[in-house]
Length: 138
Image (cartoon, rainbow, N blue to C red; front, top):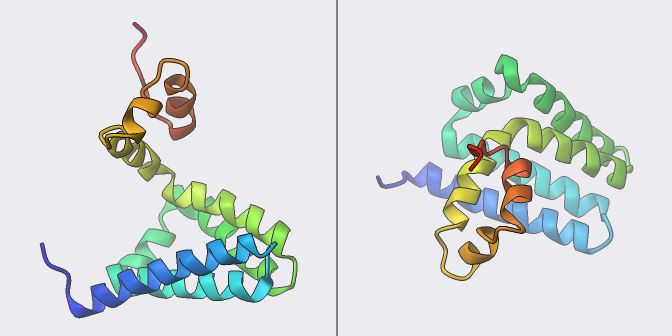
């Protein structure tokens, strides 16, 4: 499946947004970098999946708490409370994108150097519990 030009722009915006968010955290929660990263991330998501699907994603009944936390965290960052806003925003991200963590962990377990570490019997139960992966007892 090939991406359209708008979707390619969306991927670029999301990557730039993640970069600016990381840079904002590394510069001890610089408010302007965090705000710029959030704006780019949301714009990229809208470009990537479309405005109707993005609105539908954020307004799903089971994800409304995550949406509220995410928006309130961005609002707190814009009010010059970057650490509090970032923590609240992280809770929102977990509420919105928490379903994808099990998929990400499953993918990372197939990567050559990371997979054996994540599959280690000492680490795997904790990672599975954090990602919400249900494992049958042995």
